[in-house]
Every structure is written in structure tokens, then in C-alpha cells.
Image 1 (cartoon, rainbow, N blue to C red):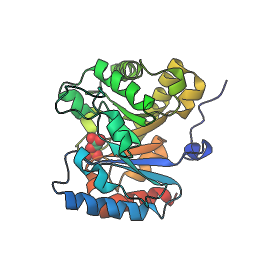
Image 2: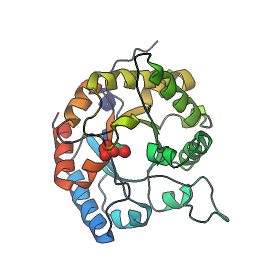
Image 3: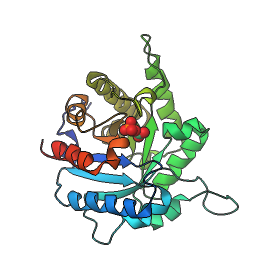
Image 4: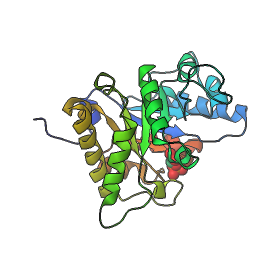
Length: 266
Ligand code: PGA
């Protein structure tokens, strides 16, 4: 049986780069600012060899953030998707439309969407649709509170099981689980790095129990929640995750690029 050897180099051994995902949320307000920010990130991505960047702009800005000359280390993600493909669904966007625009990654089940009422069933449907469209879902899980009993492990395991319940074993090899403890999102402090490490191992194990060791080892685990230029390197090094999901700091180009530089330099 394969051991869960987990080193910073782990993702390289799997032939994969570290993944840094910028979740822009409902920002910036102006299309022109989105273009400028994406251009800075794209140009910087050209200098990278160990890190891949995914930016997730709001839907209307997606085409503005893509260019014909995107380097292989620069990708576009969407912050969500609808779970329908066509018809009378006012306000929805479909996964096939996103795919058509060149989107490669889709965030599914972000806690801010869950808080607006997105159900576990809908999250499972979206994860399935995204993989079936040939894109990579970034499925967000995370507890609202932690206590001494360790019930957050059960909570997060149930979220993972439910979110991937409709994904077939065949489609389980290119998925991402973003562990984002809800209490750390938008907070001033990220979670302690040794606790991130424990959770990343736990998530691999949960995934391996569902889909087998191979998929468990291939599933990439990201950490998200109050990541910034000062704590990112330690989260990667001690937390031993495969990448980061970053909100606020991804809108601050100098800090975001410096953060990535510290990780690329390792
Ligand atoms: P934050 O957000 O980095 O601003 O805490 C993370 C997220 O919501 O994905």
C-alpha cells in the first residue's frame, strides 16, 4: 500500500505545479481594472515554472482577462456555475458556456454561496457537471466552528462525501478540494499551519476512501482563508498543501505577485 508521503515537492513528483488561485469575488468594479490586473498577473506568470496561477474574475470580465498569448502557467477560473445547460433559467450561467470561453477551473460550493442558500445537492450536481465538461472543480469545504471534540473532521468529511457523490471514479482524478475554514475567510489570521497539515492529510484519506488510493493521492488540496504575502510560504511549507485559494490578497497585484514569488523561489 502506498504511504501518504507528503512533502512540498510532492506536487512536482506528481508532475503538477503548485496552484495559486485568486478568487476576485465581486471585484473590481470596473472592466478596465479587471483587464489591468489580469495583464499584470499574466505577464508575471510568464516567469514561473513551479507555480500555476488561476484567476477567477466575475463572469462578465472572464473574456477580458483571457488573451491569445496566455502562458501555460496562467489559467482562468469561474467563481461558480449554474447546474443547467439551457432553457428558462433567468440569471444562470452554464458550465458549457464557461468552457466555451476558455475557463479551466470552476469554484464550487464556496462558503459565501452556501451562506446564500446553495444546497449540498446542488453542489454535488455542479461538481459532476464541471468534471464532465472537462474542467477542474475546486470544491470548497470547511467548518464554521472548531471545538475540542474534533467534530469539524466529521463535518468536513461529510461535505466532501456529499460534494463528490455524483462524480464517477473515472472522473475523480482531476479534482481539487479547497479547505477553507469559514471562520478564517475574511479574517485577520489564517489557521495554524500544523492544523492545516492535519486537515490536508485527512482530506486525502477521505478522498482515497471514496475513490481509491490513486485518486486520493492525485486530488490536490488547497488551503484558503486569510492567506497573505506574509503567511503564504509558511502555510505551503508546514501545511504541505498543493496550493492556495486567495481572496483579498489576489486583488492587490504587488502583494499577490510577491506572494507567488516567495513560493516559486522555494
Ligand atoms: P480571503 O478569502 O483570502 O479574503 O480570506 C478567501 C476565500 O474566500 O476564498
